[in-house]
Amino acid sequence: MLNEKNVQLGKVRSSIRELFEYGKKLKAEIGEENVYDFSLGNPSVPAPKEVKDALYDLIQNGDPVFLHGYTSAQGDYNVRKTIADFTNSRFSTSLTADNIYMTCGAAASIAITLNAILNAGDEVITFAPFFPEYKVFCEHAGGKLVAVESEENTFQIDFVKLEKALNKKTKAVIINSPNNPSGVVYSEKTVSRLAEVLKEFCKKSGNTVYLISDEPYRELVFDGVKVPYIMNYYDSGIVCYSYSKSLSLPGERIGYIAVNNKMAEAAEVYAGICGAGRALGYVCAPNLFQQLVSMVCGKTSDISIYKKNRDLLCSALKEYGYTVVKPDGAFYLFVKALEGDAKAFAERAKKYNLLIVAGDDFGCKGYVRIAYCVSTQMIKKSLPAFKELAESYK
Ligand code: PLP
Image 1 (cartoon, rainbow, N blue to C red):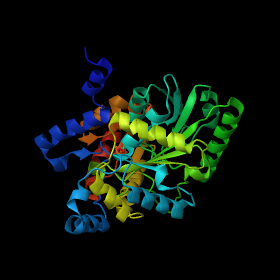
Image 2 (cartoon, rainbow, N blue to C red):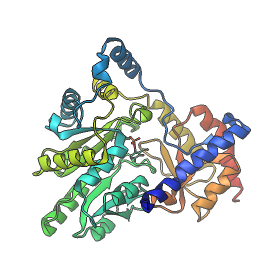
Image 3 (cartoon, rainbow, N blue to C red):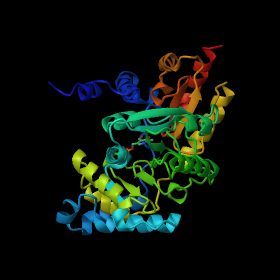
């Protein structure tokens, strides 16, 4: 008998993937240029020139045996040290190579971290709307994901609801700022208050609650907005970073986990991460790309294109009567559906060849997500379809 839970997971696609597959079929039928595919968070902006140069340099001048070989299970020492030093210079932390674990992207970072810290029955709080895979990773690690609703309209943390959700089973809180799917960035005030609430709770309850910051979109912020670094606010902080979006490298599967060395049990947590990585088979992240990311610290793809798309789409949708919270980061818009049932709304959108994802899977009913990491030309071409969709409700 197979593991039925995993068989089911393998059979049922996420609604995002389902829509993406539908889009592929539709494109084959009516032509790529006629489908307005906003389903997937796949960057459309190419990796920066520095990535190409570094890759070329590695391939031309590097030792192929080393580049294509195994590294230490937790990642190459020099790469980890470079990332730790870069993080220290940027955020005034004092991390060492032994606080960094190289991974295959943020997904692996989160899965490893949860497996490292959770025991059966532990609860992990996150804030809706949230990345749907958190539930899968959490349950696989034996835990339970508890989704706390965010403040209506702003999608900022609702602290009253958070305080109600905290209990003796709470082992971790996951934040994701800039957020997928809302694009919202938590301000310094929000992060400091969150840290204070968790510290107070830990003091009263005797629990240790880890604050996991899922950061694939850290560099994707507009208009000079700052993303506070959690380690500067909370000792038991773990950062799950990825280069998938910041360097437009989602297919290369590269990221890392950083454990705050200010937490009392940092060495134990790091050992747990190494152990979970080992148990899950997530060891020796691809070395070619470990080396590459250490050569381009601080570089990002050209995000001005995403900002242009955001501005264009936000103002057009508002004009057509949609309710939109203008996001400060990432490349998603979370828009109120024009009927109560967001799934029915997303289904109706398909008639106009608009592929948008219902918010239900993100734990937030009544909204749809538009991934605007597409070409600006596609956004412009799609606007009449958004207008017609809105008019069909009048
Ligand atoms: N976390 C969030 C919020 C995401 O949106 C994604 C991918 O879209 C991931 C994690 C997974 O990122 P990666 O591709 O680096 O594994």
